[in-house]
Length: 238
Image (cartoon, rainbow, N blue to C red; front, top):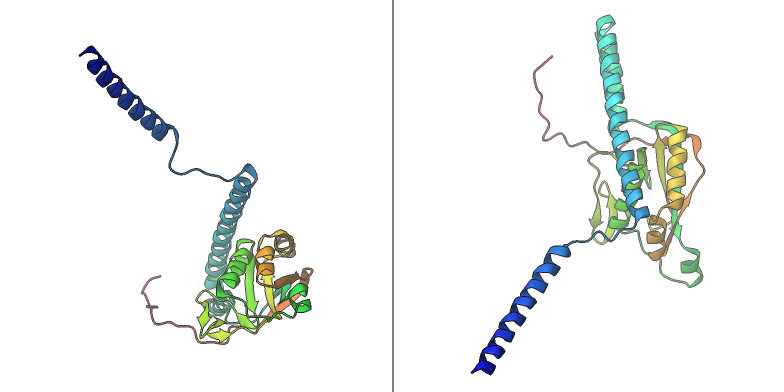
């Protein structure tokens, strides 16, 4: 009888101990762990700071444009409207852009050429990643294979071929032109692209990025399509 009670007591204590151990591990081990090292976290923080700085710069630029318009409107409303319309067309990509920038040549890797591999077109995902990298580092105006990038630009697969603004992108080699706000921004973008991991992503697809030295004046063509204004509405106000 005593032996049976001792056995039951031992089993109960074992179960209680097992449940306590499971609860302890659940409390002390979070479901999600951040496996990034310190350097990766610092890089992410640096990118967020750059984005914040870029947003502040854009807000300042818009405030400056608004102040210019108000000042010019008092002297010559018609001239103010013409200047503002010109600036808006430039910002929207509807007019030719000139300024300091760099040119990136996308071409087959030397190994792919030497091995006689078939060179395929660039994938939409890879091209979108590159554009995001450019925008993150103050790429103001961008043209891909002669196709101007604007706010409504779509980069996608159409019938098995990557297209920008519904127009197919040539099989490499082709060039990408990037104009920045200043020569300093062009140099920053140049250095960033040379050190970016995206170079490895292109190499995996048997492609390379050859980045030119920053130029004092680069010319990017205007957007040659039709801007969809279907969802724009006129509003009354000051």
